[in-house]
Image (cartoon, rainbow, N blue to C red; front, side):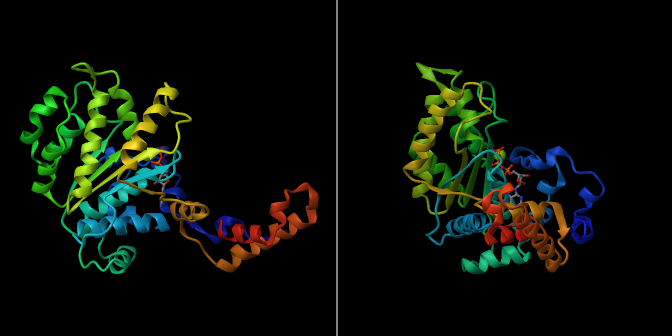
Length: 327
Ligand SMILES: Nc1ncnc2c1ncn2[C@@H]1O[C@H](COP(=O)(O)OP(=O)(O)OP(=O)(O)O)[C@@H](O)[C@H]1O
Ligand SMILES: [Mg+2]
């Protein structure tokens, strides 16, 4: 078999070439970006967009939110992003964050222009972006979800009493908060982690968990009936790992899905073979000659043919060769 080694065909990104790739880079963190911390790849809107592969799901998601916040009256308003661990949930929230927070820095990029054009939108609307990251929030001492949203919208007074008593405000007050500040984009990451932790905080007869769930019900309804607001929250598609009390977490996940399920639309940012394109985009600056990719795939394919029964049968099908070319 004579094929060129991969490093003679494709050029990895500078950080990878120089061996500077850190582990932190593989976990997107919305809380860090909000505080302008962490790897530049996520923090800088332009670098972030250049390293993002625009999957069909992500393109649709950005388009839907742009439509809604432009006041076009269409587009989904309450959106749940659900994937397994590492499935691109936070990455999708970051893409929305940068689109609306730093529209002026990314509007010139071809990928963004294309999304605007496809949705018949001239400019990215000036929007107030609210960020809540469950992992960062302190259910006992920090602001509540409603306190934090009001605080970031510079309308804390409106929710102060509810925040201090840790009691959920009603739908009218939330609607009032939103209508005063439209267009508003609310991004909630790691919601399940937060709600699991609110179980331990006593509020009146019950716990903060009950209050948070009542608030989420009212919030999803208020957002759905507002003209210019969108709420995007992420949930894992199952609780298999990462939780100490998996059973409780599983039950709460079901409850949250129900709350969102009444008004929401589910988006999946990465599907099937799109994963190859993402990994390529993240690792390589330049992919080199496509005919070289094909040559490598052909060589492996004929090798697999020769090996016959020693190799799983799917690897000997032509479709597998095409997958190798793309990978
Ligand atoms: N469309 C994409 N283009 C480029 N990179 C992506 C894309 N989607 C996800 N990634 C990258 O894949 C990695 C995992 O994605 P991400 O952290 O968003 O997953 P997650 O669903 O939030 O994971 P977790 O369940 O652990 O919170 C990150 O490094 C992220 O930047
Ligand atoms: Mg995440």
